[in-house]
Picture 1 (cartoon, helix red, strand yellow):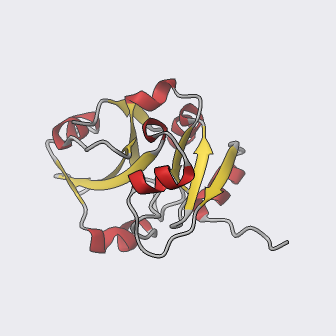
Picture 2 (tube, helix red, strand yellow):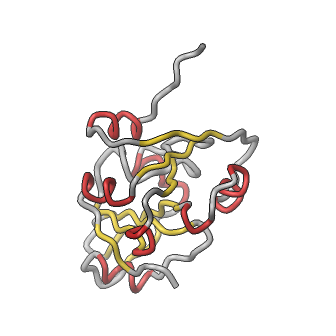
Picture 3 (cartoon, helix red, strand yellow):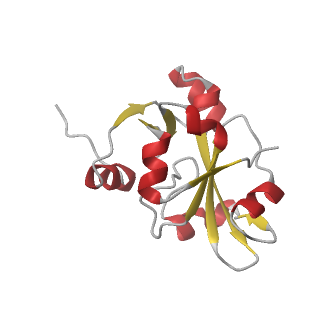
Amino acid sequence: MAKELKTNAMRFLDKKKIDYTVQTYQWDEFIDGVHCAEALGQPLEETFKTLVAHGKSGNYYCFLLPVASELDLKKSAKSVGEKSVELIHVKDITAITGYVRGGCTCIGMKKQFKTVIHKSAENLPLFYISGGRIGTQIHLSPTALAKTINADFAEIIL
């Protein structure tokens, strides 16, 4: 059997001894998080996407929210102590994070950015996030992840 190729996210979780499982799906072209969750039979409210934004200060931030939800930029800015935040342009994702669109995750980036997870995840025993590669999802504890990367839970969606 072929050895599983680990992503930076998986190596980070292994190093920190965080339990997780991996789910993969086939893809021919970019699909959004809702279609990814549906393809894997995952509940939408337990499947989170990672969005990266930058604030007026020039700092970058990661926001994790349910895939069918929309980020509220004002609430998000408040959650990180910024006057305002803007989502980064798709063309800049790889240069800033080291990941590609559709495979971006808040762990194992070039630099660990301040991360805020939507508060709905705080009461979930497990949730799904990108595994750091298109076609890969990681299933893990949101509270274990938050503790490991020093993330906060907050109201960040419309």
